[in-house]
Structures are given as structure tokens and as C-alpha cells.
Length: 306
Image (cartoon, rainbow, N blue to C red; front, side, top):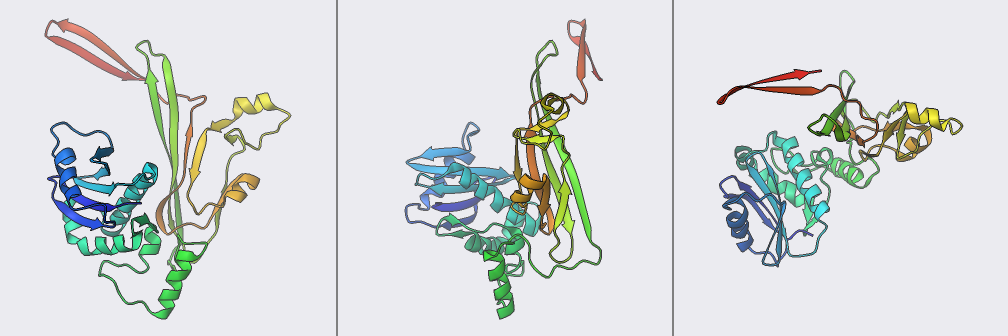
């Protein structure tokens, strides 16, 4: 549970302040400002403990977001909430900076009232929040809208609202991969892994169900559709994914049985899948530096890419 949540600018001035529990006082605001933001040495740890109080903080642009608690909480849960809270604010008013926070402070307090209940994080899905919180402020919902909101919050498809319509249905899929490599001075690969994600943009009407298959060569945690009679051949040609994470809209039962990703997509931009692989990494290119000392105070550096 979270005792309080504060948003600071880069100077340490409080932009947003909300206290949920009595064990956290306003003194915590000054403690974080003095010991973290105005510290002589840069604080690199994301958690700071002072006087039996834990400060969990992230920084987006020139804005600090800090959650304070005196309880023994799940640190991963707190950081997940802070990042989702920041993403929710960005989905409402774009770039997260001091000016936008000041211009939308009423909206942010409305979001906090819906997202956090007595220190416990609740629904942080922007698609659901936007059905009853707008930039113009809180409005009185009709009985039909209240019924729709209740259905979205408690129903099986809380990430997509009903009644979405587009003149033209469009769906964009991007596979983005990052190659992380550590090499020795002799050019030997010490460690390598690929971190990838499937980013999507959905502009579809109604409640469509999307489905796309995965190549049989892909195996996840040693589970694939390759034939058990040819293990050696499957090993040579398969791509092993060590771990993967799916968006909540993915039907995991169909993925296990059909080796296909089936889902009802959220509206707009979202991350459908995140994965990681560490085996049989083929380097896309090599960077070879050549350093030549010309004089005592001059050298030439040539960098070639192969």
C-alpha cells in the first residue's frame, strides 16, 4: 500500500501532493527534496530509505514522481504503478513536463481519485479511464453511460470500450528488436541477447478479434510445435525465446494449443508482446576501430562497419 504520492519539478517544488494514510506526513515532502533532488551526489538507487520511510521514485523528463510508504510493500508493484501512472498522464496531455502538469493539475487529481483507493492501486488503463474522465473535468454520466462504465470495469474486456467506429479500419504491426552485446578487446563475444517487442496501432470498429500465427520454428521456453522425431533438426533451425510477456488482451489458452496469438485489441497504440532470446545470436554488423598515434599530441581514429 502507498502512504502518499508526490510530483516534483526539477527544482524540488511540489506540483501534485496526495496523502492516503496517516503514517505519512507533509514532512516526507521536504525529506525527499533535501536528500534526493538536492543531494550533493546524484542518487542512483530508485529506492531511498530515511527514518523508516521508503521513497520509491522515477523521473520522466524534468518531473519526479515519488511514492512514499512506511509499510513493507512489494517494490515491483510500486514501480509498475508509478510507470503506469506516468503513461496514463501522457495519454491525456502528451509530454510529461512541469508546464503540462501545472496546466492539468485538476485532471491529475481526478485521475488519482480513480486510480488509487486508500493507498491501493486500482485501474490504470487509459482506455477505461477516458470513458468517464475528460480534460474538461468530471461530468455527470447518464444511466446508460454509468452502465457502460460498470460493464467495462468489471467485464472481461476492460481494455476496450464499446461503440468505437472508424471510417476506415486500420491495423499496424511493428517488430522492434534491440541487440545487446558485450565483446572483449580481441573481438570475442562474451555475452549477447536480443530484446524485442511487438508494437501495434489499432484503429478498428466494434469488437474485432484479431489473430496471427507464429512460425513453427519459434519455440518458447523449450515448447514448440516441432516434430519430436527430429530433435536435432528442430534445434538447428528453431529460434528459442527464453521468456515472453503478453498484453492482457491475448488469449493464452489459444496460444498454447494453436501456437497463434488471438486477441481483441485495445484502441490506439499498445505493446502486444515483449520477448527475449539469448541463443544463437547472429550479429547484424561489426564495428572495428583503428587507432593510430601520429604525434605525441595527435592521433587518428578510423571506425569501419562490416
